[in-house]
Length: 384
Image 1: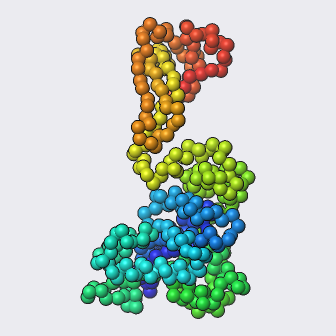
Image 2: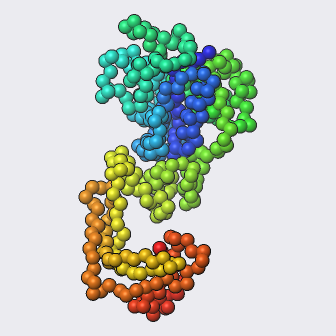
Image 3: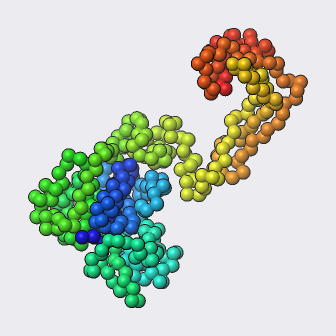
């Protein structure tokens, strides 16, 4: 039987976010849809308050900024900063209930919704009742329906999306209250993404509370191994080692820029993204204007490769601003001007190009005006 309209919500530190944090949403959504178990209309990431006190937990403003960077390509997963705005740490049960209540309040008052009043984490489909209630072939339970002005409106359930490690933490004495567990599992439900080889089903069987609500726990096996965790990324960054391909490059650039987790900004592998990060929510990619190289003279030469000459007729000078900021307007200061014919060099030619030459590779240049210089600098080349 279908669980109706569902929003998946992940609570946690996200310090920093990893690809696995985000993959869980995609894996769970595909599983629920493929088996007709639910219609997932949105996803919410809810980072915890700073008062949670976990080791290596950086300030919420940084964690939210990194999540925005990591999720900038997602069309359905949004970030809620509600927990971080409270006076202290919020229990998962309360956070789930808050978001579910807000979603259904907006849903049942859709005719009075002002876009300015809608929280930025609200799933897009909530703002379009016609989209939510049409074209759905899944049979919804009657207890998920309400009547609004004679029209049937389906209520939404916010389910906790988590890994098997969180599920197993339910058995840790004193970590979760019985009331919280009953509400989370019984009223909201769990979608548990576990790695291949683990056995969360056995854990459910051995827990009386989980077994009682077993129909409200969906187990999803991730067959694509991914052991990446925030702990691993923090460790690599702290040691000055590369964490590339474990999370978004922009996230790594951000934490290095702000020197989070012991990172140093001297490492340059991510520096190219620094300006992009600072302005990621201000300018779109099509607005980017690339700066020119430093001031250089490009002289006209005659180059012959396999008897196929290529001639550049003019010498140009290209200048660059002292400080490159390719995201800011009016910073493109390139100028191009021909150099007088009187100072044009004579012919130059490529010396001993191998038969295996591929355009784009560096080759040796010999010129009749600077041949003596090139002879002294063996190994010098010119990229073609």
